[in-house]
Every structure is written in structure tokens, then in C-alpha cells.
Image (cartoon, rainbow, N blue to C red):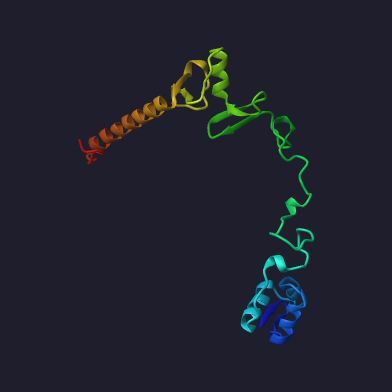
Length: 195
């Protein structure tokens, strides 16, 4: 039995289904002619013992991908409907918002030479230190911890290892402060590492 909006419809005879399928109709064609889903037609075929043919042997047109009788299904986006804005970046992109974007508290600016966004702190640091490169393996660190505070006196260049070490040391200091507060309030705080 199949189901459609009007209610249940009877399953066709196995020999009729087999002959229609062997005449070259696809499960999509059969589903359309019986007014059911492809899934229902496949269930009927399994119940009737009809072996399905491989996709490449199916000569019917693919629904949204154009006519072909070979290979994998081709999506609509691959059949000549490419966007005129595809691959456009910077001021040419349709969603251009002036070259500034904010992620969290950090502000990013568009670099027209390198055609990508960089943190505003990098631009400020480069203006304050002309001729010095930030370089691969380096970061610009905010001394006060506020990523939106890009004043030159708040920025310093560190290696990635120095930056990680600095933040880990800061986290350890915060944990020690929290431990002391909990102990002062009469609670117990087990040490994180046994010494």
C-alpha cells in the first residue's frame, strides 16, 4: 500500500511494476505515475523482488541537473548557473560593508594590498613601528587583556610561544586568587597539581 494526500492507494501488481521498470522507467517516473514517493516505489520493488539498476544505467533526465545518462548526479549550481559575484572579494563583493568587521571584541580591517582582513591592532602596531614586520610565528598582544583597546601603548609583539606562556601564567594567577577567596570564605579548594 502507498500513501498519498487522498489516502491509501493499492500496491500495483508485481508483474506490472517489473514490466514498467524493465521498459526503462525510473523509480522517479513510476512514483509520478502512481502518485506516491520514490521511497514507496522502492519498497514495492523490494517486496516484489525487483533488483534495481545502477544510476549510470538510468537513461532518464536528472530532475534538476539537466539531461545525462552517465556519472554522478550533477547539482543545479554546477550546470551553468554560476553567480556573477562568485569569487569577488573586498569592495567588489556584494556584501561589502566598508572594510571593517567585528568578531567578538576584536576589530578587523580590510588590507587592499593582501586582499584580506587583519586585526586592527596589526595596522596600529605597524604604524607605530615602521619597517618592523610582525612575521609568521608572532602575534600582537594586548597588555591590558582588552582586545578592543588598540592604543599603541597597549600593544606589544610576542612570539606565539611567549604569548601562550604569558596567558597560562595569567590563568594560574587568576586560579590562585579564586582559591584564596574560597579559602577565606571557609570553603576548601584542593590543589590543581600535587607538588
